[in-house]
Amino acid sequence: MQEGTEYFTKFPNDYIQGNIKKRFGVNRKFYIIYILIDKYRSYENYSWITIRKALDFYGYKITSRKPKALKEVLDVLEYMINNKMIEVYQDLDSLSYDTGIEIKIIPENFDFPRFTKLTSSQLNTIMMADSSLNKENILMVFLYINSYIGCRNKTITEFAIKDKYNNPKAFWRSIQCMSEDLSMSTKTINQCIQYLTTSFNGRPALLIKRETGSIQPNKNKPPKNIPNIYVLNKEGYEQEIKWAMEKIKEIYMVDESHPLKS
Image 1 (cartoon, rainbow, N blue to C red):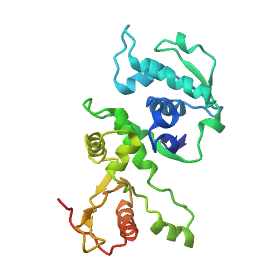
Image 2: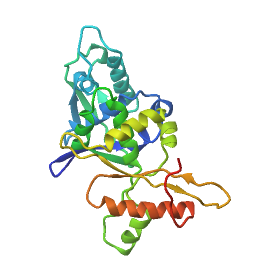
Image 3: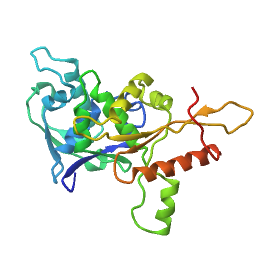
Image 4: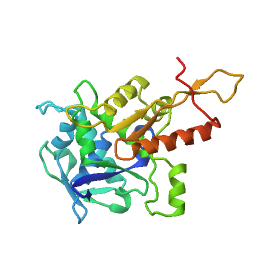
C-alpha cells in the first residue's frame, strides 16, 4: 500500500508477537515472503515475486547447489496456499530462481485486523545492516517492538486526548519477555536493538531508547530495574516517552524512578 510517497506493508501481529514456528508451524522466511507479496500487490490483489528476491534479502549467492533457504521459501508459499491466504497455479517444485510467480491474494485470509505498519524506508534501513548481523533477526525484533507501540484514535475528541495518556506510543516490555516470545537469545535481541537505535550513513535510527532506571515499590525490599522505553524516531517522541514513563509509574504504583541498579 502507498501513503504519500512511502509504501508500507500491514504485517499481521499474530505472526510477530510470538514464536511463529511453534504457533503456526511455518518457518521465519514467512516474514520476507509476506512483505514481498504485499509490496508487489496490485489493486486487483495479484502479486508477482521471484525466489531470487527473497534470497537477496539474506545475501545468499545463487549457485547450482541449492541452499536450504530455497526449500524454506517454498514451504512458506505452500503454507500460505494451504491456509488459503494465496493461490498459486504454478508447480512450486518446477520454479527456478527467476521464475515470475503469479500469486492471487485472498484478502479475507491474507489481511489481518490487527497489524503493524512496516514502511519501505524502515525495511531499507534494516536491509543496510552489516553482514555480521542477521537481517531477519533485526526485522523480527523491529516488528515485535513496533507491534506493541499502540495506535491511537486520530480524531480530536475528549476521549482521544485522554487516550494519549492511557496509550502512549511506546514499548516497554522486558528483553527477557521478548526472548521467550521470539525464541531468540537476549544477547541477539540486544544486538538488534543496538542497531535499531543507532544512526549511521546519514540515516536516522529507527527507534529511540530511553533508560528508565529502577523503582522501589516496597521500602523493605531492594530497588529493581524496570524495562527501558522505546519509541519510533519521529516527531513528538519526547512527549510519548513522558507519557510512557507516567504510565509505568502508574502500573508499578510508584511516584518516582531511581538510577539503574548495577
